[in-house]
Image (cartoon, rainbow, N blue to C red; front, top):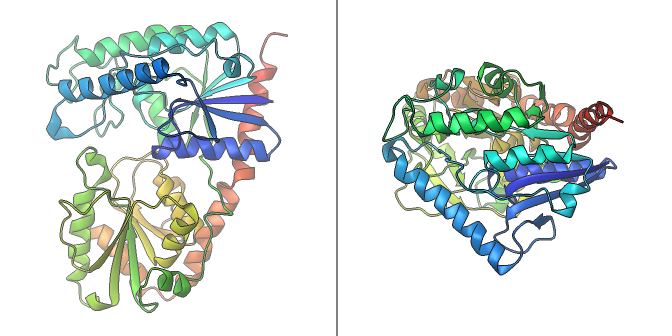
Length: 424
């Protein structure tokens, strides 16, 4: 079975990583899987690119930058919520890898890649199309993160993100373009989480489509537990310290990452009786620099961006708890990576996180937007005597429900069922 995956970038962001991981899992299970991306930041042996020559690369850069900067110009800067216009795009149907595939699997296709017009065009190939929704954009008039907005239940319009909002605003016009394209495109939706599947069913654009819930996968031979005391020594941390970890990013672009809640929770934790501040250390990865960093109440080590997954796994293993304050997330890779390394997770009960974190079993699900409850989850693990069993349960969750073989098999069964439905 030949499968081609289409994604805007290689390995950039959660969708890019999830796409590559799935392709590797499918290849290991006997399929012939390939990832094709719109733009590569550097040459890669792991993916093919639709933008190889100088002219194609220049056009891709123009599309990407135009999409991003025009979106910023038309949306309210203070809201910091990702929004896509999808005015720019390119055709993919004449590429040999697309034409020769048995299954075309779409992933994150924004930033000037597949606009509604070029999505609809894929139906001309008369092949089964699968589309994994890594965020909400496919069924909204432009936003990638919805929060409490319910405009996508109808036809969008009156968008709270736009500077010029009204009945026939850009979100409504985009909704209409998507509606026309989707009426021409036969595709099967994969939702990585139950939350995403429920959101799709509520949408006016995609509510009538079939949806299958299949989680993302992870490299369980890479993201695996290391002895905590040894992992702490690698990071030059006292092995007797209780280590907090977070994938913190200064919230300049995406307010849904919940940075302020993390800061408030740690300040709350530090003030509680029985919490010895000198016994706790915070490690942070993922930040590009230390500019505009808030002050944390505990000794803090900034690891920066970690490109090596094996080293990242050791960082997860060094932590006694991984904290993610995300306010809306589909199936965040960091949560899955942490659990795979046997590190319990404390997070808000939101999005697809409850599909991975089992409350008081492999982590703690805090009340939504409650910094106090987030702190209570950390405190629970700080005082918990049953830590080793919680860590084992974290790893077991990944092996039984999210491992490569499990997720590849679910996709292959779906692919085959769609192929069987094709006219003979």
